[in-house]
Length: 42
Image 1: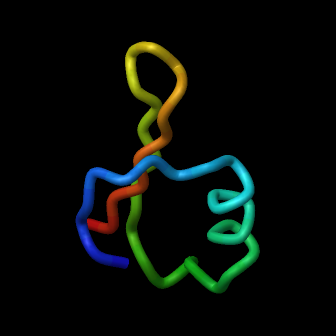
Image 2: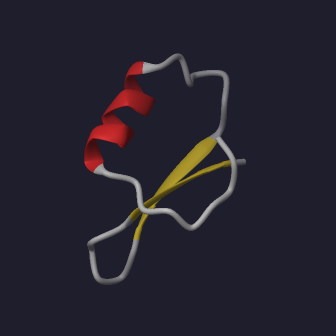
């Protein structure tokens, strides 16, 4: 996943959770208005 400013839909986050991400460190952030979700891989 590249860093970008596109909004992630909830279904995208669900797909990320189902993938094998245990080996990656990542954070999920919700925008202040609560409409956008950002996922960042550290």
